[in-house]
Amino acid sequence: MSDAMDTLKSGCSRFTTGFGRTTHKFMAKVGKAETTHDPAYEAEKIVCVEAGKKLKQLAAHLGKVAELFSTLLVIQDEIANEMDGVYKEGGEGTDGLRGQQEYLESAKAARDQMEQTWKSELIQPIEEYLVQYDMMHKRMTEVDNRRTDMDRYYHNLLKLTEKTTGTKDNIPKADAQYKQAKALYEALLQEMLQDMPKLHEDLVPFMTPLIAVYNTSYAEFLSTLNGCSSSFKDAVASISVGSQHGWMQVITPQESSQVLVKTVSQVVVVQSESYAAEGGAGGYGAPQGGYGAPPQQQQYGGGGYGAPPRQNSYGSPTPGYGAAPPPPHQQGYGAPPPQPQQPQYGGPAPGYGAPPHQPQGYGSPPPQARSMPPPPGHGAPGAPMGSRALPPAGGPLTSGAPMGGRGLPTAGARPLPAGRGAAPPAAGGAPKAHALYNFTAQEGNELSFKKGDVITIVSRDGDWWEGELAGRRGLLPANYVSLM
Image 1: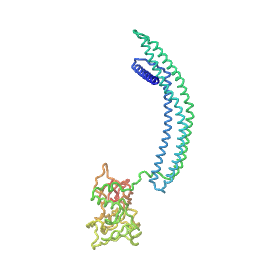
Image 2: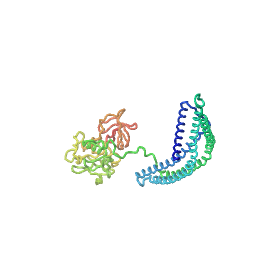
Image 3: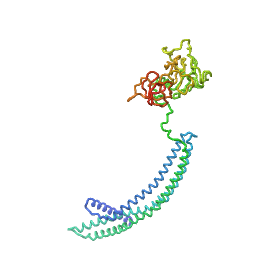
Image 4: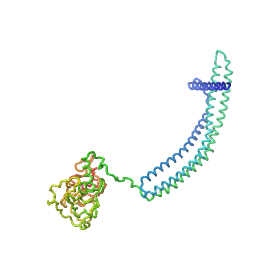
């Protein structure tokens, strides 16, 4: 029972003391009471508090550095795995990928060693040293409380001594309370004024070995990384760099992709345009390369300049890839110039001014036609040139068209890609065209260019356009370029 009463009395006393301190601080804030100030103590207190904060931050940052290195190595490991996942085994960079794995294994071991050293030789000693600052912080709080008690007891004593009426019997009690609070405050204040400078000066000898451990362990870690990275770099020293910029796309270009087709009727147009641009031969349904395939290569030198045209009558499909080559006397260097082809149906071969053949249905072979030279590098060398006809990107020219001039497309040939012809000029100047294939001029009024060149189109009239490239102007085949 007595213990309970003592606990209750103690609780009431703490409440009364706390209420009295809060009331006095409020009155001092509004200018109704006085507060004691000690400039020397306040200056030492600021230094001590700042030093404790910096030590706590130091311990925290040491732990964060180790975590950051761990995170960095995890990310580097993921990068190495992603590169290995998309890279073909046996490529020139295989040794580089292996070097990455060896580097990461050594780096992880070095990081683990550094983290263990920092925990035991840096972080743990700092945390132990910070116990003193925690005790000093609690003592600073007690100094503030004792000063507040001293000031409020002194304030009560003044009020009693200034009374002009009534009894003054409480003055001795108030005076005793003030003197006791003052003695307690001054004793702790003197202790703090001695301890705070000592603690601040003690930081120098305490921090000296910490600096040495940090520098040594960090240097060893970086030295290990440097040794690993040297072999890591040597594994790819023979690989030339820079070609990764402007890498050419290998998929179907966006402007000719089927993603733009919205109706069935457009499918036919896109197919025919792609067919003509890619160098297809034969009628619809003949075996060809798919969309985006390069122009057909003539096998065994057939189809080059001077080689006779492929014979093809209705009902016999045009030979595709892998078909047997023409007879030896029709191939190779020195082949005789082409002879005028005789019509299959007894009629004369149509020339300029003759009505063109009508296109056949899907799957039917094209009408008999003279095979014109494919893009440069695909034909048989050594054949007589004569005057130039439109080099086809795939479709045949009109049967019987004379070799002495530029041939016109037949009705059975694939139409040019959309956008060639009457498209308006680009805003701000003449229209530009992107070269689809290499083209070498065979006459003085023609313009040579390479695949990928950007050509300024001066005029568009029929199947041969006039263009300008690098200060040179001349004619170019329209089906070798694509308007931009």
